[in-house]
Image (cartoon, rainbow, N blue to C red; front, side, top):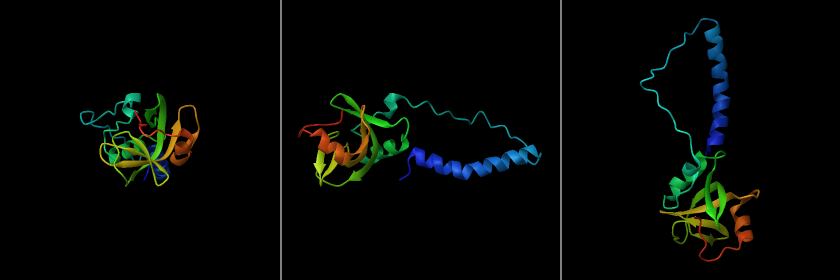
Length: 150
């Protein structure tokens, strides 16, 4: 259940001592630098705002992984009522079927339909607001029966 942020933090804890060890070995002439094979090098393109937008036709699993992979920055987002909503935490959910992007309440939870399966919206941040649980947002939004993430 790691996010990009939590994984980065764990990697820093493990990697920092290795970096110190490598620098010390290099400084003591115990290690020689090795140039990378530029022919095998790959480049990761910059993640754009459009890349971070959720496509609700994707499966619940794909959307969950996108949310985890883009948290905390730049953050996966969608829109509701014409305003941006950042999804901070989601999880697959079992319940009545819903169409892609359709919002519903199930067992007191805020859920959204996807191309395959449901997602519980555990935590989100409405544009200009603080982060909140999906349940708090559901109560505050007073969703109509046909509301959907766009």
